[in-house]
Amino acid sequence: MAMQLPTLVPTPAPVAALERLGDEIAELSAHLDAATARLLELIRAFDARGGWNTGFRSCAAWLSWRVGLDLGAARERVRVARALATLPLLAQALARGELSYAKVRALTRVATPETEVRLLGVGRAGTAAHVERIVRGWRCVDRRAEMREAKHRHASRALRVYQDEDGMVVLKGRLEPEVGALLMQALAAARETLYQRARRREKTVPDFGSVSAETFPVGQQQADALALLAETALHHGLDPGTPGERYQVVVHVDAEVLADPEQPGQSVLEGGTRVSAETSQRLACDASRVVMRHDHEGRVVEIGARTRTIPPALRRALDHRDQGCRFPGCPGRFTQGHHLRHWAHGGPTTLSNLALLCRRHHRAVHEEGYQVARLPDGTLQFRRPNGHPLPDVPPPAAVPEDPIKALREHHDAQGLRVTARTGCPSWLGEGLNVGWAIDVLHPLAVSARPSRVET
Image 1 (spheres, rainbow, N blue to C red):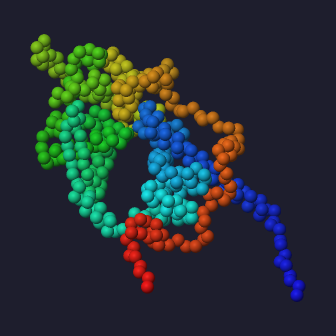
Image 2 (cartoon, helix red, strand yellow):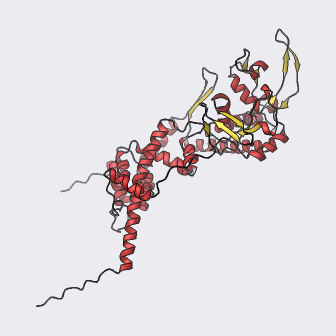
């Protein structure tokens, strides 16, 4: 009996061309993922060695300035880079282009060295959407463990407050999540109050915020907010005294020391804790000032009226001109007025001799060796402690004429073979049962499953 063979119809040329285009997209995407793995290695090394600590508050802030990343995306790159240091299998899969950065980013939220092998299988088998669903359900596997953790948290709540050897007050504590959330909301409200106060330049409560207020870094901002919370609590119930006079920080500094840090003299807080002359100069840039004259035995013989170093009208003009911290790459909006030539050295309190800096960078200029000067054309020039200029905009990176060809040649030289199937998951289109997947994958779920006895 004769058999009729099926007729083979060649693939139409337009369809074949589209398939080749799709393969090229998939292959180049895998190359980019492999290059991203190298990028994360560089970021991790740069972060660990503190290469960003040249006036920037974090590695993410440096990345945002240097390579143009959104600050949130930069923080995520740093987080993933740090996580991959303890997850070599995920790092290798990304370096070979087998896992996309999106998958690795999700998996690093929950992966540990103990669970890395299982989660690597999830990344290879599923799509990015599958991985996200697995990750979202990962920590909800064992309710009894969560209850034990909640009881442990409650029993371990504590707060310690003590004064360190250098006079700084140190707070260490653990708060339950809901109490911590309450504190965080209160701090956020206080930070907003300080921001609005700085914008209006009101002088109703001379606290840390009125002397110097800033948005970045967050740790210093939180400290200012906590000071406002404590002051407000005392003023509204624990102590009815006048906050404007009772709750303030006073620095006593001799005029000679303020003009020249090398001169002998005092620079101390009200309680006697010494601060550096450079710190006194920084605070004096934008603060309330009272001049007291003493006789040869130290007795006060004359007290002048309190004045603002920078008058409110001039401060408003300064805010309007500078629109935030002028340090390159800093988006800080809580700022202090900085005298380019300090008034104690004869510098005038004029718009041309002033610039806005956040507290982090104001400290960098006064106490960390950074320098700032106004050039003849009116622009500001910042220099690092070694004297090298810090440009407002970083120089552009050198890019090959054909970057795709250069990337492929680089990977070929490394022995990396990337094809259109390299990053393709092994998913065959079946539905994803998240509950079953978590039950199989999560170590706690595996140990909690009752063993079956077969007869």
